[in-house]
Image (tube, rainbow, N blue to C red; front, side, top):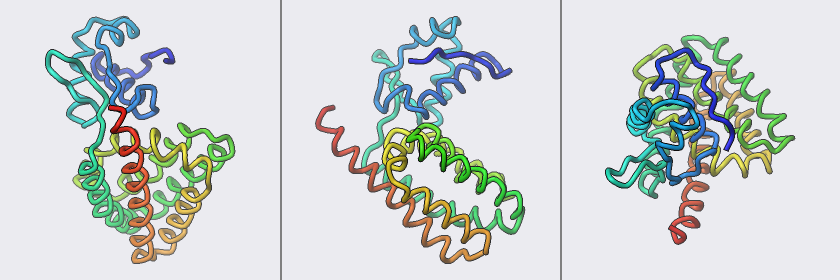
Length: 225
């Protein structure tokens, strides 16, 4: 595993949490993997207290499962979790896009365009981490510009899990094909033209396809567990 360096000027537990969060999202810790508080504390050069506090924050975000007297583990979604997560996204993302278009259309288009610009070299390099980060930036951009903090905060409840599933499960496929990249370009085009009926249909298909990949991967991994 890469060195876990701290470089964000926040409280110690917050800094630990943010670094662990990114490590989970980037796949440094696999889904279901155990996370040793002692190992993390030693790697960061801190006591176990801020690590324990960080684990609690990550559990609240749904990224970590803490089993008393057993240990802490990266989350592993069930089939029901995947269905619920996709349904949640399908309900929220098209509405966020419509609000973003009305509230700050130019800013949203710039953010989405930057994300797509970062996707293309990631596809060429087959860099699933870079692609996953750009993919996450695209979807998060809709909420960043929607002008409704309640909608944005609702998405933040699941954004970490979505990003982790994306990097671990769909991005390795996406960087081998251009289908996801082409879908994002189509979404940007529809957004820029304000065609939200078509945008919603395309986004629904896009999210549903991701859910199918998650479900297939879950079926493969379940017997081994």
